[in-house]
Length: 589
Image 1: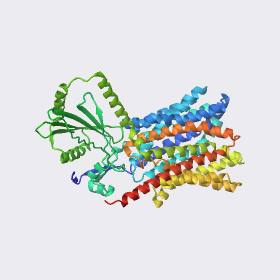
Image 2: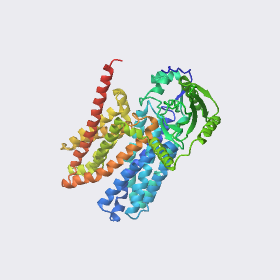
Image 3: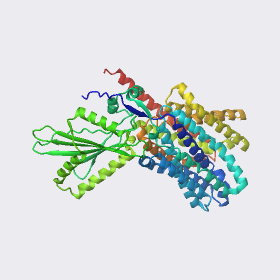
C-alpha cells in the first residue's frame, strides 16, 4: 500500500474570490443586461415593422422560438471552444455575432433575413457570450460564488426594466430603422464586458500548503486518490491506440487543482506474458495545465517498461516541462509520487523516445484495416475527452439536467404568456403593465438579497432552487384565484420573490456539482437540452391552448405541472442518496 506523501510547506494557489473578480461580476452583469434586455424587447422594437411586412402570428412566434432554441442547440460546441480558446476570446466572438445580428436586423426586408439575423446570428452570439461570462464568474469565485452571481443577476435585471422605456422613446423620435441601429450601438457594450474577463492565472491568491490542507480537509495524497468529484484533483485517463499495438499514448484531462494546474500520473504494470518474448512499451502522458481554459501548458512524462525472463522490469522515466511558474511544482510531485511506487531511473526524453523508435521500427507493419480501427478509436476517444461525455454516465447529473430543463421550459412559457393570461383574467392593459412592473422590481431586489438569505439558511443551491420554484408554483396557482387588484398585487410580489431566487440559484446548481474543468461541457449539455425542450414545447403548448378554446389560463396548469415534475424528481434523488448514506454509516468499518 502506498504510504502517505506529506509535502513540505510550499506555495499553493486558489481562486481569487474577490479582487478583480468583482470586475468580472461587472462585466457579466453589463453584458447580460444588454443581451437579455435586447432579446426580450424584440417584439416591442420590431412589432410595427413585422406587421408592415405582413408577417403572420405563426411567423412571429416561430422567429422567437428559433431565437430561443438555435443558440442553445449549437451550444453543444461551447465546451470544446471554451477549453481550446478560453472564455475571453469566446466572449469577444459572441459579442461580434450579437452586435452583427442586431445591426443586420435593421436592413431585414423579409422573413428569411429576420430568421438569419435575429433568429440565428443574434441567438448564437448571445449563447456564446453568456456561457463565457458564466464560466469566468465561476472560475474566479468559489466561496463567494452565490454572492457574485447575485450581484451579476441584479445588474442583468435592470436591463429589462430600462430598455422598454428607452425603445419606446426612440421609436417615437427616430422611427424603427434608426431605433434598431441605436440599439445595436448599445449592444457594443458587450465588448467592454468581454474585455473585463482577464485570465484567472493573473489574479490567483497564494497560500501555503498547510493552510490549503486545513481549508480543504485533505492531504495531497488523499486528493490524488479521491474518486469523489468534490476533490480538487481528478485523475481520469483513457488509452489511445496509435500506429502500433505495443506503442500507446495516454491523454489525461483532470479536474483543476487548487494550485491552478493539473497532474497526470500513470502506473501501468504489464500483465502476465510469455517469458520467452521481450516486450516494451512507451507511454506518453500528457497533462494540460489550463488556467484560463485557453493557455495549454504541457508537460510530458515518458515511462519505458521492459520485462525480461530473468530480470525484473525496468522503468525509465523523464519529465520534460515547459517554462511555467507552477510546472516545477507539478513535475516534483509527479516524480515523487511515481518513485514511491515504481523503481524509476531517469534519462533524457530524447533518448527515451529514440529507444522506443528503434523498437517500434522492428515491429511488423500493421494492416490498413487495423490502422483505420486505431484511428477511429483515437478519434472517438478524443471526442469523448473534449466533450466530457462521462458526465452523461452520472445519474445525478442527468437528473439535474432534465430537472433544470423541464423547470426552465415551464417558467419561460408562463413568462412569455403572462400578458395574455392577465388579460384573460380581466386586467386592463394599464393594470397588466403595473403587475409586471411590480414583479420585475421585486425580482431585481431579491436577486440582490438572496445570497444573504442563503447564508443565513446555510442550504445548498439545489435546496434554494427547489424552494424558489415551489414559491412560483404556489403563486401561479393562487393567481387564478385572485378576484381583486389587491390579490393580483400580492401575487405579483411573490412572483418577483420566486423569480429572484430562481434566477440566481439556477446559475449555481450545475457549477456547485460539476468540477470546474468539466463546467464548459456541462453548460453545453444544459444549453442543448434547454434548446430541444423549448423547440418541442412551443407547438405542444400552442396545441393545448388552441384545443381548449384559446384559454391561456391553461398555461398556468402546464407550467405548474412541469415545475412539479422537477420537484418530484429531485426529491426522489434526495431520499435515495440519504438512505444510501445512512446505510453506509451503519456498516462496520
